[in-house]
Length: 201
Image 1: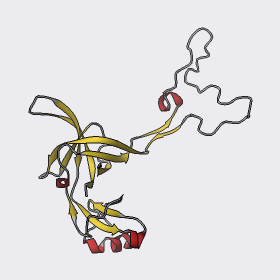
Image 2: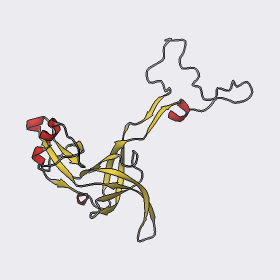
Image 3: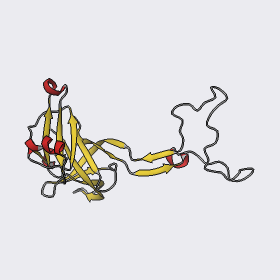
Image 4: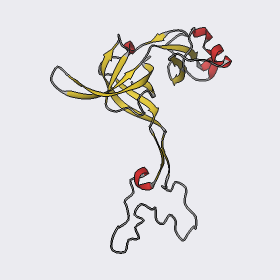
């Protein structure tokens, strides 16, 4: 079961024995505890729930849910498609090996309200020779027929703070003593953001 939860530390680079520099994102993957195992017979699908961190003031429903696992997690996430675990089992970075390919999910940085130039990479209008100076305005957004703005039109709006998954990242560094995992490349989200890591078959 190659799945784990962690928090993003930041980016750095490591130098291999052959002198090649590899950019990596370090993730603090504290030991996770299996809080629930779902099966087809009981729940209709297979999945494993993992909890990580130390939660404070858990609600009574959550405290009762994790009582069998003897833990008080801050975060609980579910990973579908695997049942190779028992409630109370501990998952560490040791489940991964150097060279493993993983898919990483996280919440991207929130950018707030953004215009089309920043949000959709639109070009600006001309600044001279008749330009009105409104170089970042959207411009025309519709046509004479059907006399409405079509769904999916790229316009200004809230940008970022979305769930993002990056696939085919390679495990390039493992520190079992410090519970740190190094993934080649960039990982979505800010520092200290929660990261879900799934091993790809």
